[in-house]
Amino acid sequence: MGLRQFLVDAWGWLNFKPVFHDPVTGDPNRRAFPSAYATWVPEEDTRRLAAYTVLAAYDGGQAGELAEIRDGAQARERREYGDPAAFIDAITSDVLGDEQRIVVDGTEEDDTTTADEEARAVQEDLLAWAEDEQLAMRMQQAERKAVGLGDAVYRLSWEPDKRRPVVRAMDPGLYFPVLSDDGEFPARVHFAWELPEDPRRGLKARLRRITYELAPIRPATVSSAEGRGQRTRTFVGDEDDPLLVPGDTADEQGAIWRQYAWNDEPSRFTCYLTDATWLLEDLERHSDVDNLPMGKAVYAQRGDGEVLDGLDLMIDFVPVLHLPNSVPGAEEHWGKASLAAVLQVLDELAASDTDAARASATTGIPILSVSGLQDGRASVQVEPGVVFKLADGGRMDVVNTAPQLAQLLTTVETLRDRAAVNLRLPAVALGTHDPAQMPSGYALKISLGPLDKLIASMRLARRHKYQLLLRFVQRLFIAGQHPDWVGRSVHPANIVFGAYTPTDRMGVLEEVATAYAARLISLETALRMLAEGGWPIEDVAAEIERIQARAFDQAAALADATGDAEAVRDYLGMKPADPEKVPVPVLPGPATTPDDPETDAGQQQ
Image (cartoon, rainbow, N blue to C red):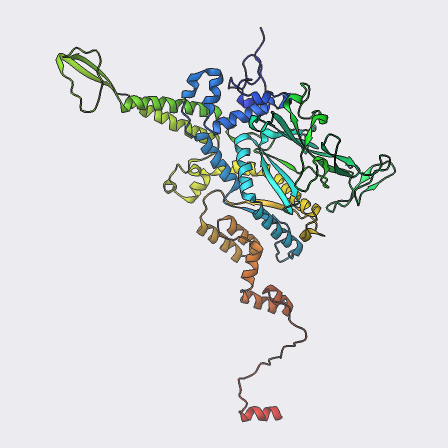
């Protein structure tokens, strides 16, 4: 007799569900998760893909349909009223905040530093790019995937037709990285999914795979057609003396080097893109997503006609970003879904909702027990206005299920509160608590403490990823030779999330005004605090310029302290004075008129 498997991995929190973890084999149910057992799916990704399916079922109110595969038709009778989706939406909104701002280092100036004009230009171009790419919507799509499934993926590419980088939010179920030992920055990444059969178009079931691979630089290639009409890429020049991409150099050992605009030293690596499709019937049983028969592949073409068969992207990084929902464990790659800790509570909540629905039916249409009917009938149909004629000794009893229904509804609220507590979502953050009932703003802030720690941890897992995203965008602009980016360098940039909790604007204003008046904080810090507190300040640097342009008292104090007229003009945002136009000096003295004889006499003397 074998012992039941005790498996601890990144998805061990789902082992309580028999459909996910078979009591005997320990594997997910094959009928419930057929896509996880496709021949091309690596064995180590089976539980991950099955976990994504389970989490998506909870989000879509379909957990009963999934359980039906193992537990039978009665599993479909469970009521699912959208609590998981509400929790996911609330956490996603809190993580993103009320706004998302792109901030480039060096765009703000203070008393000790001046603003970098190139950094300001980079920030303006990134803001324009974010508007064109609808970055806020892409982030909403990706973040909801991350919160609900535990992982999200961004894929970037340079689009020659649009003349800008394009960002896409990808489903993590399509993401198959070839991980290294440390679990970070894979040098080979696949996106793969099956295309169903289409009899009307005469198309068989296929597998599409998009691959990014960081590899040593190879000689130049061009698109060409083989004898059977298959589009592919071939090397340029003779086999013994192939041509290099303009700008590349080869050393004595034959290694090819390339100088990228964003690096100080030459690099031996570049990223190659392959987009190919296979017929499922052509796949061999021992082949997985990383080992497919390339001789049977059909390659796609880019909009400019380039065949995507190992196309050199002219960049030294893989333009793919994996976004974990939580800080991964040491040497781990995958994140953890926000609902992971409360799935059992959600099952109990669905069961209580189901019981409450059944009890409400007997409460709305009560069960009657009638005895002693004069006509001798064994049963009667209860309808409004019906009259029962009872013989002597007859009676009518009503089964009252209202107390049971009330208890069930109390249980439902208790379970919902328990789930919110474990998710660290206080009632005031969910909108189910009346803020007027809070004794003070300090008490409100204390009640939001668990949510503050949750969001701080989740934003920590995202901060470096979004820094990389903006770095990749700048590099793609430079690699694409966009006219506005020629000669520029890559500047450190980040996406700053806005406030996620209600703030007391007047309280923040009083705090900031007191600190700034006491010279405890700078004007830059004061405006940043106001912006984080909900004040409509979009650009701190621009707001400082507008304030200083009207700060004549401070300008006068600066003139008295330095005696530098140019510093005063720069402080007020005025143009430098024209050196050819020397201002006429005005000498101090009593007010006089040209007709004053005393003044004329004084001038003659």
